[in-house]
Length: 315
View 1 (cartoon, rainbow, N blue to C red):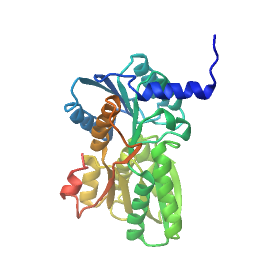
View 2 (cartoon, one colour):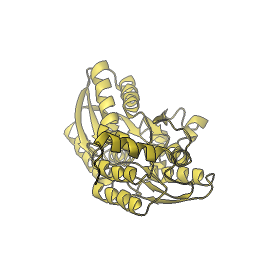
View 3 (spheres, rainbow, N blue to C red):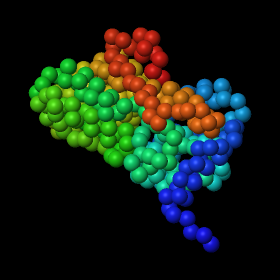
View 4 (cartoon, rainbow, N blue to C red):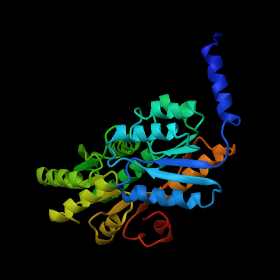
C-alpha cells in the first residue's frame, strides 16, 4: 500500500471538500445548545424563515434539555454525520468538546456553519463560517451601560451562565475588562447558573442578601437574567439597584418596561438562524461565504423599547 505524506493527504481532503464533494438539497441539521429557551426558539424561527426560501432542503432542529448537557450535543452532531446530512448549523455549547465531532463532519464532506459561540483554535479548519454576536463587544456595552448608571465606585455582581462556553468567555470577559479599565467598581462573582433560571434566581437572592450594599448587577444570558429579575422583584430590590440583562424575551422586555432591569443587550437571534441556513446552503451550492459574520447587538431600555430597531430583535 502506498504511503502519502500527511500534508499531501490533508491537501487532497481540502480539495475534495471545496470542489464539489456534495450536491444541493437534502437535510440540514440545526443543533443548538438547548431547545428549552425562547432565545433558541427564536433562532429556530429564523432558520424556518430561510428554509422557506431554499428549494429542495429539509431541516431538523434539536438541542439538549440543558446547555450543560454537552455530551448530548456531541452525540447529536455525530448522529447527523452518520445520517449523511447535507449540512450542519451548530451552536457549540463547549469550545473544545465539539471539535472532534465537527472534524468527523469535515472528513465526511459535510459543511458546518457555527452560530452564537466559537470553537477553540483546534476546530477552525473544520467549519466554513461563524455567525455570532461579537460577545466581547456586547459585554463591553453592558459594562458601559452599568457604569453610566451606577458611577465609578461601589460593588457590583456578575451572574453568569456556563463557564467555558465560547459566548460566556467573550461576553463576561469583555464586561470585566471594561469595568476594570474604566472604573473602580468592585466585582462580586461571577456566579454560574448553568443557564438554569431557577438556579439564577436562588443565586441572585443569596448575593443580594450577602451584599446589601450592592449598587449594580449583570445577568449575562436569557435564563440567568430572567432569574436575576425575578429575584430582584421577590426581594423588594427591583429599581433599588441597577440591573443590566442580556437577550430579549417577553419576561426581560417586561422587566425593562417596569424598571426592574434598566437595560438589556439583545442579540440578533432570528438573524443567526436565518443567516445560518442561508450560509450553509451557500456553502453546499459552492457560493462564497465569509469566515466570520457579526450578527450585532442592540441595547434596549425603557426609552427605545417600542422602537423599530428594538422590535427587529425582541422576541
